[in-house]
Amino acid sequence: MRKQQQGFTLVEIAIVLVIIGLLLGGILKGQEMITQAKIKNVIADFSGISAAYYGYQDRYRAIPGDDVNANTRWGATAGNGNGAVEGQYNNGGAACAAAVESCSWWDHLRRAGFVGGTGVTQPLNAVVGIMGVQTGMAGGAGTALGVGGVGGFSGLIMCSANLPDKIAIAVDSQMDDGLSNSGGVRAQLQTAANPDIVDTATSPYQETGTNTYVICRQI
Image 1 (tube, rainbow, N blue to C red):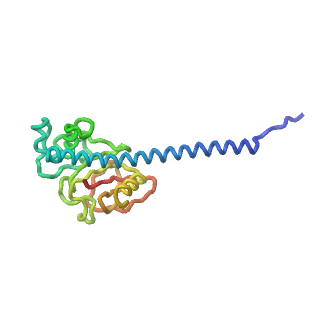
Image 2: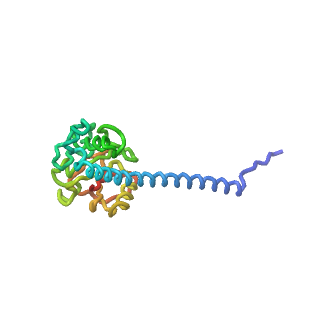
Image 3: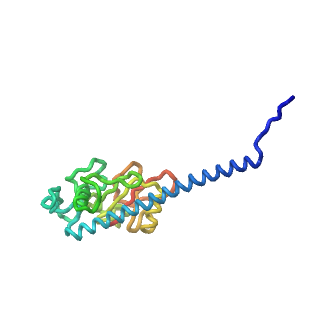
């Protein structure tokens, strides 16, 4: 006698599909929650470091990194006191050294107790991009992220690199005007990790899912 083969019923298939849908929904929701947490973390970095800078300036009447009294106060490498943080936010891709003011910035803030950690090592953001500061273009030689070298940031800026397009756009929208080439927050499309800042404005944001940006904010 032939043995009758039994398949899945419509009810069983429907239950499986519902379970799969719930699992996919949970995964996507979890990914969105992680992205939102990273956005909040990046914004908190900008706010926290700005607050640390103003706290240091209020206490010592000097700019961290540029502070001429850092040596007598802590035995740290002192700045030249010219009112600018010289060097690049990423130290040109090299390891940070105390002789560079944009690196000493972190050492001075840490010795003063305004940020955690020790030494001149630059902190990383939520997506493992470098965070750092510079004045204009590498210490004041022209403006950063302007139009044709003008109209950009001439003062002190903080930059955070390697931000995925979705995070970069959300950070700019929540902190400024959501435009990459205007306002107090500006962005540069990256072609490599932790890039140098250019002196010209870059193209508008494009959310491709693969673009990454370095965002800078005027302090």
